[in-house]
Amino acid sequence: MKLSHSLFFIVFIVLASCSFNNETKTSLTFLRASGQYMVNEHNDTILLRGVGLGNWLLPEGYMWHFGENGDRPRKIEKIVEDLTSPEFAQNFWKEFRKNYITEADIKRIKELGFNSVRPALNARVFLTEGDTAVFIEENFALLDSLIFWCGKHDLYVILDMHGAPGGQTGQNIDDSPNNEPELFMDPIFEHRLTRLWIKLVERYKDSPVVAGYDLLNEPLPERTGAADKYGHMVEPMYKRLTAEIRKIDKKHMIILEGVNWSNDWSIFTEPFDDNLVYQFHYYCWGNPDNLNDISYFLEHRERLNAPVWVGETGERNPSIYFATTQYFEKNNIGWAYWPWKKTDNSQVIYSVRPPEGYDRIIQYSRDGIKFDRDSAEQVFTRLLENSKVENCDFLEPVAQAMLCQIPAKIHAVNYGHDGSGFSYLVNDTVKAEYYRRNEPVKTVLLSETDGKTRSSRQAVLLSGGEWTRYTMASLEDFTALVGVRVKTETTGTRFIIQFNEVLHEFSLSDTAWTELTISNVHFSLGDNFIKAEVVEGKLMLLHFEVTKTTVVK
Image 1 (cartoon, rainbow, N blue to C red):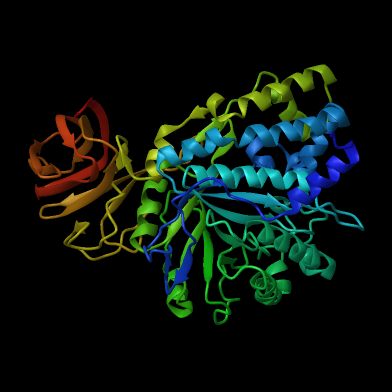
Image 2 (cartoon, rainbow, N blue to C red; image 1 turned 120 degrees about the vertical axis):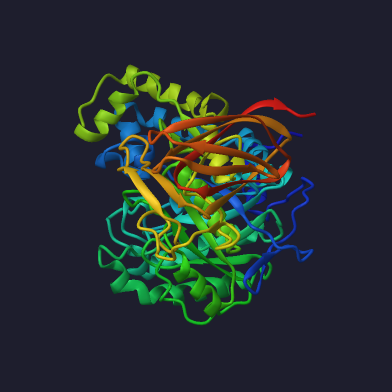
């Protein structure tokens, strides 16, 4: 017997409304807070090393290189529709969401060594706006697929409410309709946010693949006055949301972000639930490059006695990436790199190739001058195909830097984070002027930040008896050619470069930059180290460049 179309639709909606059924076997177990640690059901400590799935369910204009007229999802949608047609635009977004993140992305994320993803959710994708807000049932299937794939490939999922109903920032990043944080201005929006979280929790409450619920991304910026005006409302809202979630789900972690882009934690009083995680975001945007201090968050962690997690880091260069993830993990802090993909960008792991004619779309986002519909449709159609991970450009140095893996270029300023006597030894305890300003290893600025790579050139200056030590991981046994970029400030400088247990001694008299080449250097599967020690004189050290030559079977 065949179902009628109407009956079939009713059955589909009922099934779609049910709790998510994770039929894929997974080794993952529920995570929870245990003091200052995240642990699984076996009581093993878990550090989440993830990537943010930005631009998928909440497109951001800067990732498309768009101007102000395309700085947020609703404006990007308008650009597509204005240049094509409502019918084309509707189909474009369905295909975009189907192509941008697929199982191939999830499989690749796992292969590279990450263990989690943080999808940025836009409430408007799941819940309509207007006087009567209703759920868009078909779009929940996007999350169902993501969680299914992640369960299959053993990746945790952190559900991130990046764009709340009404907007929690009043900025482009949350798809704010009126440039106001209306979530805090009209109770109807909190009601809708609660409805949406309950819907998500009911759907995924039994899934161990979901690590936790990130209630609000980066609420209330300080620069607009929003934090001062509404900041006192954030923690009470978190408490109300958590109370509603706990009526349904007592297992999953609740993740809380401070105001002012997540990083002002003065709003937090005592923990109000026994399974809370506190999140901050970490971007090193200073010029020249500087590794920002995290002691503020470590102090609050002691006060709150709860796990701390970096929900976003990235948007800079591989040198910073290498340093930050080691810095976090030394302090028992997991992290998520932001974002997995962007269009035509050198700072991400996968870069979407702009199709021919894409510059005309960018120009329209800036000056509003249209071009013919057929051409625009061709550009957008090619963009859909280019967005698939198999058609993107893989930027291996970015992934290697985030995971501190070799072969790679290791910058001399990125010595370890185990402190004096372990990661470095210097004679003078005066703090450095650049980069790692809380430590005494002397750094020298060679050039200001390059506008294209957003990376400054900084070297370490070591004198007789001083050394720095570098740690990195390898996914295999291999031999390598290592280039060491050095310069002496005095004639007759003697120094040692040590690769694991093997030492190489050098003398240097030339005060110009020199590239030393060391062949047949063996690195082992797992952790490795490099140590640079000056015996006599003064040495300026810029980087080690490890190039694989032979895989050892």
